Amino acid sequence: MFSLGGVTSCLDMRERSRTRIDGEYDLTVQGASIRVYCYGMGSLVQPLEYLQLNGSASDDGGEEEEENYSQLIHRPR
Image (cartoon, rainbow, N blue to C red):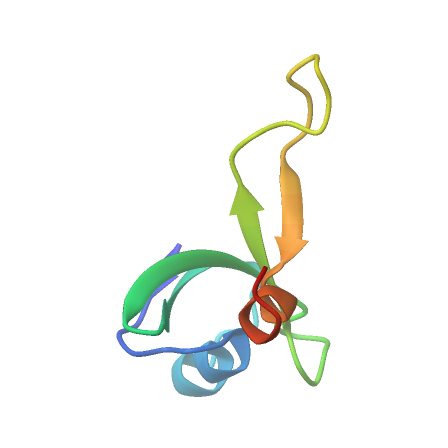
């Protein structure tokens, strides 16, 4: 996990830290620090941001769910 203060998106993280590695990063959103998974840091023009949610997709306590964080920021529920 990599942290750099005041970073607001995966693209911002890539430009400021020059990292090209997918992984968890701390971003600042509306003054709060949140951890997101950045995908496509080395291959996409605009890396994708995913927020890991605690919980399961099934009753058997299976896989963790992921939701596209970029969509959540622009269209909150």
